[in-house]
Image 1 (cartoon, rainbow, N blue to C red):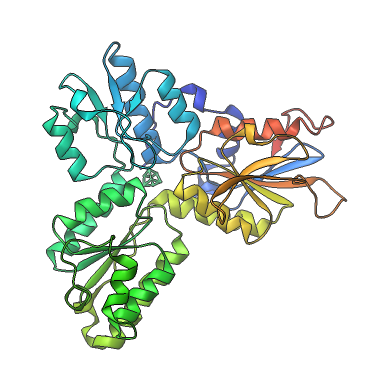
Image 2 (cartoon, protein in one colour):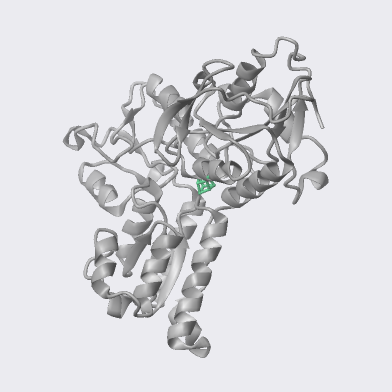
Length: 406
Ligand code: SF4
């Protein structure tokens, strides 16, 4: 979908845009290799693809247009528009308010909403229950729906599975707004279950093949199944859809595990009756950014920095990919880089922000320091540029932004 969006200029970076547009269109097509911005004593090795995706730009364009066209009106977002703190705080400064916090807690009394208010559905979509409740308050959501088309594609896929009487297994993070929305849309027409990753897929498959009793199933998934879910009945014919931002490799492994399990239980010849092979519900940005990050990891560097919101699912997977190869620091913006000695960053295992010192360390003291750099699909290019500028402050001899893209 090649479309130009009207995204506010202050999210853009001429330096980063120029770098992304290097080479001819033909060279860029299907090319996931990183490039280097060389500042002399420090080099940034940037992923081929990162930053704002289609759905994020679409949501930003819609909300900033609504804000510009409706001075004096109350404008609400159901929750964060996207998972990026600088974008959300800019919207708050412009008077936009959130109805709910990041954990789903209500921050505004819905009974005070009126038909005059504008309420925008974020890029992740929302639940049908919330849509119904807001409609009862008189709010018209249809004109202000920023749900990404790739999320809606997952809902359509789940709907197709439901029509064919498949149980829908949703691979995603249950607390994530997108997975909540997908679950809500799915359970209106199908039995459904949410699994977090491969380990949980294995538990479900062990129940299917009889290695685990059904009560173990409910111990794990009791709060993540549709009403009246019966493993004996509903795990005989299954299809999988994904939260759009999961790890591509894991989605493949999960689909293969279910395929093998169903073939083992019902036989290869009856497989199509029991397993719908729908493994294409990650979005294009997830595939492209993860492929480019794989290449970035393989290119090698002394350390990696991944920029994005700490609650951003797609960004966290980029960190996981890089952390297999080098120290990888997940930062929300340049302010996390406290000094050349100390960095504040989000630790995915501990699920908390922590300080690390030292961090700006070369593996090999000869030659320039090489820093692998990428960002999530909701991160503005300008934030990536500010991270580079902050690091360059520690290298007075660096050539000030006269770098050449190679
Ligand atoms: S990451 Fe994918 S699904 Fe999410 S908003 Fe971007 S394009 Fe849409």
